[in-house]
Image (cartoon, rainbow, N blue to C red; front, top):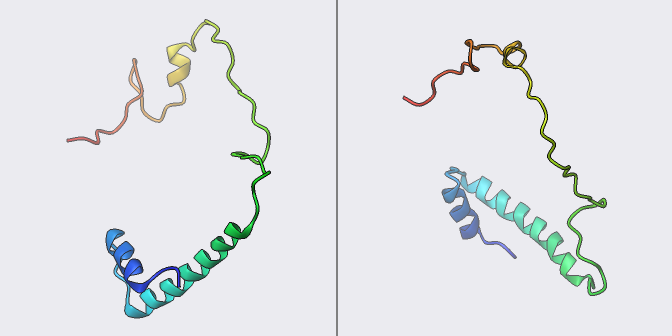
Length: 95
């Protein structure tokens, strides 16, 4: 086995999960199965495989900054659910 019951119980405690004995046993079996499948990847020879971080080629989407006129305040606030004359109005969340 790649994972023990004690490890499952420790992670459950860290996540503040209260698992029954049956759930701990079931989770141990399921995680062990998952880890066994993942361990099969260690059998693959990846020496000549380039490292990839994306499935598709990625190019930089940045553009040059161009100074231009801003959206007028009245248009920016036009569709706001709550606004005063100057800004968006939001509920107070910190007391």
